[in-house]
Image (cartoon, rainbow, N blue to C red):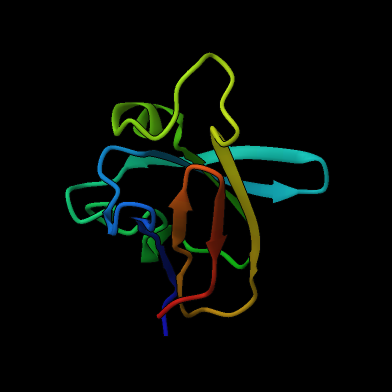
Length: 117
């Protein structure tokens, strides 16, 4: 099987997909981070294509950074210059060639993630 990575963002405070959130994907090696992809969520809270498609997949350690501050401000869930949540990093490993799905469940003062399907 060929591996790939997908993600999505759900706004658990409002009970809907989170549209317009910028996401960056980094490959991590020791103290080195190398950006390899960038996307934004669509109306369904998903990226239009896998953030790491089959042709670019490699096992290893990665980090997704979800830039949620603008979304939280736009939806009236946060205000001010300094937000409790702004850029949310999730570091994870992919050790087999498989479909990995790493979603973000977001609220203004907390978040969670899991390995989805």
